[in-house]
Length: 139
Length: 139
Image 1 (cartoon, each protein chain N blue to C red):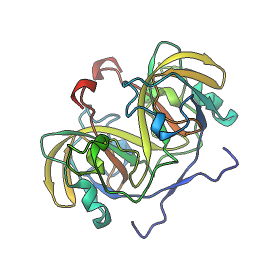
Image 2 (image 1 turned 120 degrees about the vertical axis):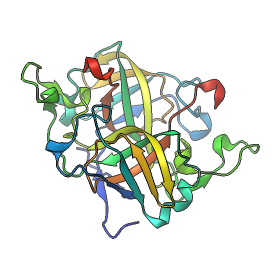
Image 3 (image 1 turned 90 degrees about the vertical axis):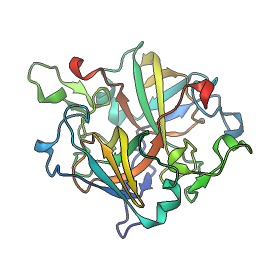
Image 4 (image 1 turned 180 degrees about the vertical axis):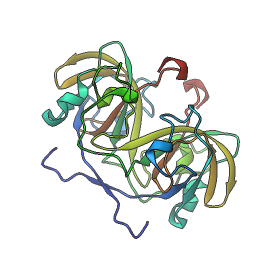
């Protein structure tokens, strides 16, 4: 889209989930998604050391089975809804198919972190993890 | 970090902001950040058509002036805080330097969208825009 080539996003891990295909996956985590393991690369272990069970985190994924050439979509595949610009939807099909998931950490086992609920498919690349921000006065 | 090369993230626009350097930028938007324009590429115009003033959106950026080789950091550069894994902080310095910003849409003018508050620096690439999700029952 620009003359620049863009930037290289590098997977830091993968999702291990019972969800294998898009048709099995709920549209959002809080619509019945299962627990899933986040399995990280050994190279990023130091970055994970303060992630604790019982906290909430934000997981960013690269939705590698999405279509990158769609700019409009029908939300939730619902024929009653109008065609909508993808930046006003959470459709995985978008120019940069980044998934944004707020989940609870259930358990940590070294490079493996169990979270719930997560609607991402099995083997989806993980690209970042962030804390949920506390109110400004408590940071 | 993996044998795979990774994925190409392509800027869909740029931030226009009075903030020119990291030392000028607040750590989070709600810590005194200014309004800023999101200026999009013409190729993604269709994807923006339903973004309306007065709504809240989530903007994802590529923090192109960040260091990608840091796995631990001292939060807020505060000497009283312990060294912390980057995935438990919002530090821009992280393997994939993706910024996550929840902002209000102040105005839209075609490919230009005015938002507030935004702590991203001038010319930061924009890589995605998402709606804030309504409660599950209202989707």
